[in-house]
Length: 361
Image (cartoon, rainbow, N blue to C red; front, top):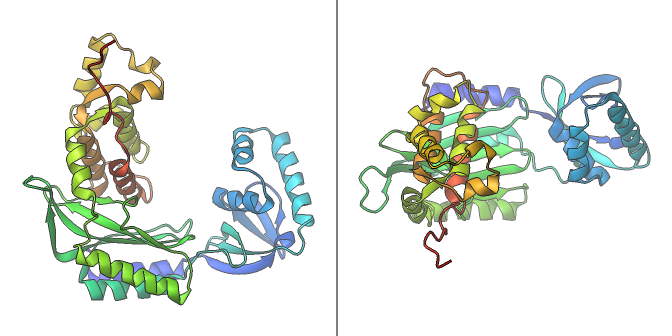
């Protein structure tokens, strides 16, 4: 558990380093490169999320942005910047809100009134009210200084839940509360007691996003949390999805997705993932013994190829690696991302769930 002293220090750091918001005329933001801009004589960095925001404001499609990102030439970048400056000049009356991190990087650009960024002070006030009301203990805390995102995952005191009669599938239930530029979001947080693996599930109906300070939205937000507390913070469809994941073989695509989630967030080697997703090597050996070259398969084909690993094995491998320190170097904020990725995998339609193996022709 996170102690009170640890929480207090975490809170102070997040408040001190939260992005500063300022309303400006978009035309006053002068871009020098794709990564730097000038405002009132001050040079600021610009991250890619802010650039995407700007493209949206200027009506440039996501496809156009993707094409630009794939173009690395200096001439392409120069042409883009000139086009963007012209668009800004034609929109002199357009007022935007920029969020600037303490190290002077613009992390978001939104039209005035459309930013969902809620202050860190309000976020912590909200969290403490919820934690006290619902008897929540903090299990996981994460703050991203690059964009100001704050995450706290909690478990409810005495909140244990067993899936059917499966003795190994007992969970400590709770809630995850996050603050991003899109608002405050509450999601179910499940900790598997047999190995203390944490998982954040965002696709169940129990998730709720608060995007504004409107009193009606706040009231709806608190009412929603009261409803899910009455169910012990357990998503309605959680048991069914866990049972299905246990009994469904992971496709090669799902297995490789799980391996990638772990390797892309740490310095672990692909062959070492077997320690977490057991049965990986055996599955590849069986596939290759059947004369199938997995390297030559496209993703659609991999989705139709069953492995000897269940979807639940893949999910638990990810959450196990994310929830513990096994000595591998992880990227900043990697644990949170992996716990969310595992939760997303659980809530999806599994690739091999509807395969018909015995066909008449």
